[in-house]
Each structure stands twice: as C-alpha cells, then as structure tokens.
Image (tube, rainbow, N blue to C red; front, side):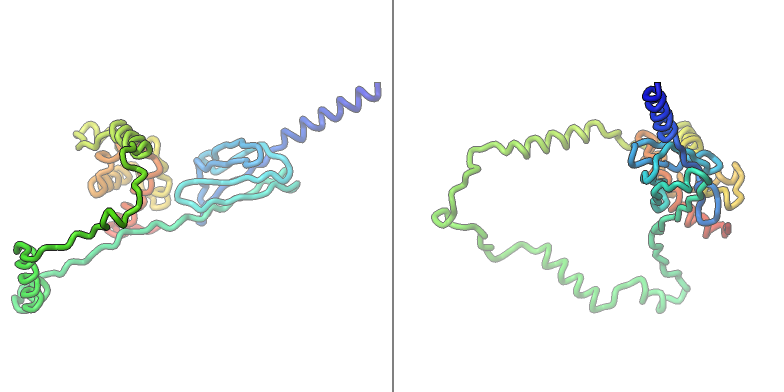
Length: 264
C-alpha cells in the first residue's frame, strides 16, 4: 500500500512540476506594452503571443530557455529560475534601427544665368572630353582584335563534351517554375487599393502610431501617403508580406514625421 501511495505522489508531483508557468509583461523602451510578441520555449518548442496589454503566460520548467521575438525589435531571452515561477517578470525589447534612404537635395535655381549654369552645365573641358569619347565609342573599329583562345594542341581533354548539364537543366526548370507561380505585379484599381489599405489596418501592427496621438482619420491619411510614395498595393496586394509591409510603413513614417513635424 505504501509503495502505491509513493508512486501516486511521484506522479502527482511530476504533473504539477510539468504544469509550472512563467508569466509577465513585454514593454518597449518607452514602457509601452507590446502585443503580438512571439514567446517561444526553446526547450519544449511551445509558443504563445503577448496580448494587447503586453501580458504573456507560457508553460516552462526550471532552466528552460525562453525567447521573445517581434519584427522591428532586437530579440531577447531568459533562462527560467525558481523566482520566475513565483513573481511576474518584465521583458524589455529594444527597437532595431531603420535605415532611412538618403535624400539628394537638388540645386535650386536663383535666376542668375552665370551662377546657375555652373551647376547645370558641364565645364568646357568635361564637355569636350565627353564629346570626344562619344565620337570614339560610335566610330567603327579599324584594327583586328586578337582572339583570346588556347590552341587545341595545348588544351586538356574536355570531359564534358557531348554531356548534358543535368544540374543546369534542373536549376533552369526550378527558376521557370518559381517565375510562373509568382504573382504578376499589376497596377491596382481604386477598389483594390481601398481593400488593400483596409487589410493593412486589420493585419499589420500599427501600434507605433499610437504614441503620436494619431486618431483613425490621421492614420488613414498616413496610409494614403505611404501608398502613394511606396506603391504598396501594387507590390503587395497579391502577395501580402506582413513583415515587409511593416518595414515599408516605418520607413515611410520617418519621412512623414519630418514633413508634418510630429513628435512623440
């Protein structure tokens, strides 16, 4: 009887140990809760997403490795300790840098012909050189160019002669198959563009706009701006890549923020 009870208690203890959970909140550098963060238990391969308040709860054992992943942020991770089972933990994710395309400032005309011509026209020496080079490139060749080949008597045996390049054929077939299955990029009509922008609002994380106090009308205005300069519907409405669209929006907002003088 004692042996049965011991086995029973061991089973119950193992079940309770396996059901331990780690919970907490995920925040950015401004202490804003982050939703849709993927929380992965590397040891058990379990995963959950943080909710709108940044809260998460995931099953784990002692010393399990848990990672926190979201696009636009540096990855973070922890190793579970006894303390993590007793108290809620806060995870801080740092935003990754977004490269803003270099903007070339064009020369503004002053109305002074002498001054403007220095910026718009090539110097006489440069113009003369360009003219001479253009004439040379267009003129027919007068000398016979030597052929850069090795005489057959000095060349080795060509073991590929008469053979079919199987790998080349397979690679070509794969390339044609990918090209055939990839959606063709076409210009959208008005209704396709509106449906695409609505899908962005439904499926892409636009929480980075919240800290600027933008209401729904202002968000719509920004999306129209991003659509105009990035041609998002033309490029992504048939192949909706959520991560790529998110980065395109962040890049567009960097310029939009400067133009409209927005501050967080």
